[in-house]
Picture 1 (cartoon, protein in one colour):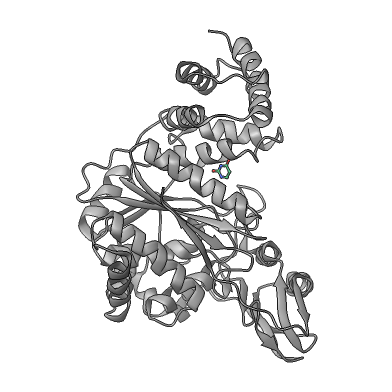
Picture 2 (cartoon, protein in one colour; picture 1 turned 135 degrees about the vertical axis):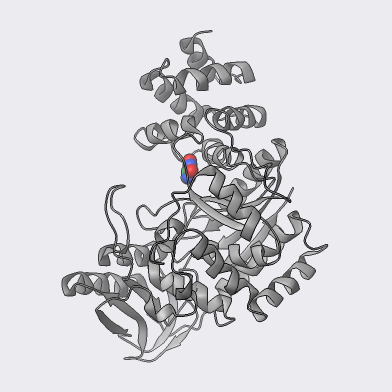
Length: 435
Ligand code: URA
């Protein structure tokens, strides 16, 4: 088999066989197929597309290109959750202890933030001492003992995707539905859970800006998950404005704690309850979504979800007491309000701009090597559809540097559109894709 022939076949609109895809991914992972040939193939796929069989074969080959985590030592049905990423998306922080309190084993791999979206690992490091650098054995033991563990993604997980994604990123071949879906799902399959619940975001702060594209991605990923024998469901949710109110690492941890105390923002709580219900259902902890939802609300009301978060933080070296004393989480030195420049209704918030404000304040990473300030960020007081009076606070800004604060404030105000027309609020959950 020759890579040249495969490129020609795809360029001319042909479909690659599973054997051909295996040859290509193995060769590329081992460095036998050079980047220039793989780049040509990615561009041919970009223009000619891939059929369902090709996309599944690509996903499986990338998933098998490195370690496939074996979670069979963990008792019960393991359910993973994945978000395509957004601004203020602190879902894992509240959702995982909620479902773990219900007895759903959570064995999760998470990432760090890059660009305008945050990462779960950075947020968790707001708990002094907390580490996701734990061995695979400790990871499994913790899940068996306390029902929850989160570790960083290892380099050995789907290395073909890592290499291919880096290449796509510099050859203008990222935004192809088959390539995106196979990239995300290869990592999820390698991470070993029995069932996968996907949170596919849509809107100005999401990877997919258009709702129809988000639904198409959701359908494709659900098809791939099921094709690989994993129970998979996707929730398509709004990311046209930040989720909840808090944007910034320690501020989001506080909001997650508030939510586990039953005092969280309604949209954020709704997302956690929806995703959590599908996780509980997949794990056999409830017979219906309604029953799962009631049980999850019960875990908030009786304090067991909050206690689970404290246990989880302590089990990974962090100060679990901070869960009960969030005022001791990292705090910024300058706290200021951003007053509204006019009366009216919030028409629109350019969502990714709010993520960029947090980045400017020091809360995000410009490059993989940058260090971040966990204490900075914003807490919004007004979201789309809310009425506001001139001078009333749109948000509280938390900063450690007055120049950065001024820059973030200007950018924040430019991201808000306020005028006289009342706005109907849009639902957070756009739909469920499960087949
Ligand atoms: N995230 C991924 O992991 N892969 C893609 O291709 C796009 C987003």
